[in-house]
Image 1 (cartoon, rainbow, N blue to C red):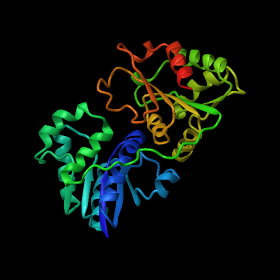
Image 2: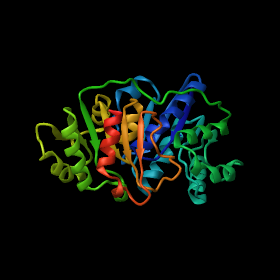
Image 3: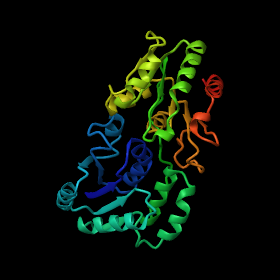
Image 4: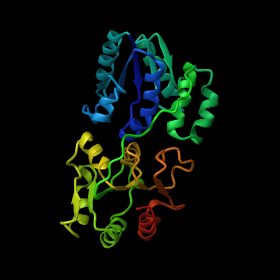
Length: 305
């Protein structure tokens, strides 16, 4: 059985948009076993059942971000004797790609596929990759290993219940809608629908969410800092609608083909990080996320709901 190592050192949303590529690799490599490498800081060791049950990834390998952690990792990976390694990061920087190449040599993998500085397609790809969606970009990596693109699903089964979710946090402050805007929007939601509202976020968003739940504690509930990755997936999976800043939860909603409104800053002019789900509305101003009007959001919500 071939052993394949896939490396994508990134956060939740990045992992999710890599799923179609992982499925494609699995389909095109009969009797292979896929190992996925990421840091403990980026992915939880416990992942949703859909990923486990679909047998997309056979084994997750986690490492610590430190010099000694990387050295230990190199010797650990050598023991697996991987037949192939796929680098699924979209780095266009020379030094990062040189690092990737050297790392692949050190772990002594037989075949290396991905975005390396020595790859003959590197220059052409680095010039164009900014213009394409990240899901399609991952497929383009597979051209390096002569895999043809298949119609690989980027979704899980749809289930709707009578609550909606909002995700108020984000990796960068410039991507986060203000408390004032979220406050106006939740007032408008309470007026226009009868469903309950669940707020999602990290422990850093607890105080932010408390300012929203106090409006109506019978209908607005905060799960900020209270969920692991599996619980986050399940809450969105069973929701009827999702409204979010630019963060990983929009890609979770896409997995389940949820109706979703995404509030974007103006940092992604080509839409390469947009959810690939057709059931998504992207709202993006020309001059910063806080210039998105809550009244524009509620109008889109009512028309879409």
